[in-house]
Image (cartoon, rainbow, N blue to C red):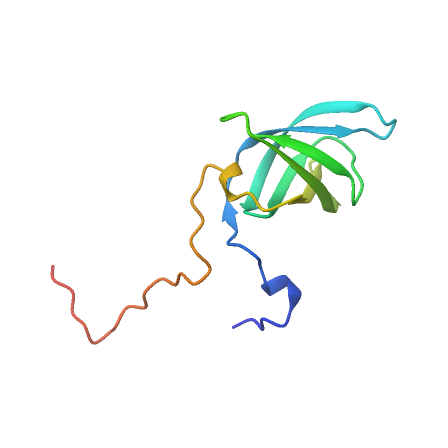
Amino acid sequence: MASSSNPINRRRSERVMLRMRVTVFAEDTQRKRQQIEALTHVVNAHGGLMKLQMELHVGQPMLLVNPQNKVEQGCRVVRIEDTAEGDFAVAFEFDKPNPKFWPVVFPPQDWHAPTPDPSQKTAR
């Protein structure tokens, strides 16, 4: 079991693998406001990870738009990695938590799946 003292293992909200198109509004390297489509890979109530074909920098503000419900959410870049496909994997954090931005229901922090009791037989 991983230690909770490691910051990587302490999440503020449950992560969910979700591939969803989002619209990103951000300034490019020439400081021109651009609109680009991105694809999320992992999301939570505090942000997520997406791939896009636009160079950004850590700390850069962005506006995300959920095209399904037109909800807008301010956020900032927290990490960037180049990918083998030539685009960028961008980790982002919402300006304020917004679990309703994503089309998923996040379980409460104290939720735990029940552990099966091997002594209990299931009916077939």
